[in-house]
Image (tube, rainbow, N blue to C red; front, side, top):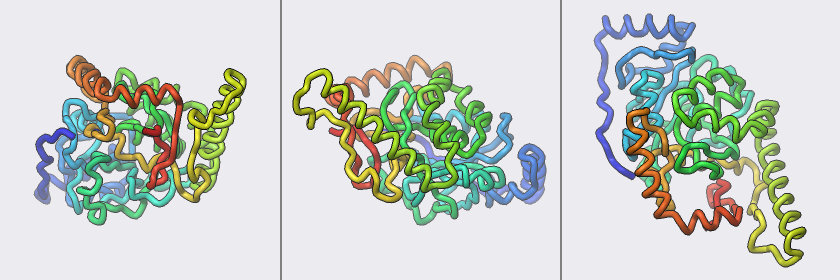
Amino acid sequence: MGRGHRHHQGGHASKGSGAARRGERDHDHGGADRASDLQDGPSSSGTARSAIKVPLAMWDFEHCDPKRCSGKKLERMHMIRGLRVGQRFNGLIMSPEGKKAVSPADRAIVQAHGLGVVECSWARLHEVPFHRIRSPHDRLLPFLIAANPVNYGRPSRLNCVEALAAAFYITGFKDYGDELMSKFKWGHAFYELNETLFERYAACKDSAEIVAVQNEYLKELQDHERAKHDDAAGSDDDDHDLLFENTNRSMQIGYGRMPRYSDSESDGGDDGEGGEDSEEDDEASNESGEEEDASDDDDDKEEQAVKYVTDRFGNTVVAS
């Protein structure tokens, strides 16, 4: 999902300027308590310019092309703040280190402290010091379909903005999710592709119900494929079924693939952040996406066979 680029430069703000920014942030986000959610000061400048009244934060490990990164675009628009390693954030974190699924039960945490993401490459996951960025509220996302141009239609290959929007949709902040996705030309497609799933997830009570709904949905896909192949061929379809190893295993949900929302996804040769660029970068993004898709021809052929498995992390993926 790796191309390197410059690192964020963090630093302590002076007491005077820090107080002024905290005052603005408290007013913008509707509560003084939220200033504490970004301790040691933000690592990016600017004041939030959106209708989203909760903090958004990102630990960016510089694994991706900044011109194609949805997180970087949100940062340029002052909608998300970059955090340094070791900097604390009390909000809900979309992270591959999460132990349970995000659910409507997390709404109060999002309301009070906001959302964060870990922007990194799945292929370079071993380089990320999760022990230094783990928040008290790490979460995984359940099975969803990506809508970003490079990975359109692929299960669980979400990028940064899709991960944040998905968490908003599931926790009952649809307006906030729509606000994020409205910043991208393709953004409307994400909710449209996953509308049924979002409605079912949003009706759940807690993480356990989210997992149950996910597994029920995957079983429906499996049954549908089996019936389709039986009707069409009447032959042995073992090689074409939607087989999900351990789909009912506790807490094994689709969004262990959380790093798929990083631009620098290199697993399989495709980039997880296609189309994340600003409008002036669209042409470059499309060209890059075409190159990466061309290198992934074999995977595309297997996508057409609609074949999924669950990897050792419990992530629902397209079988290779």
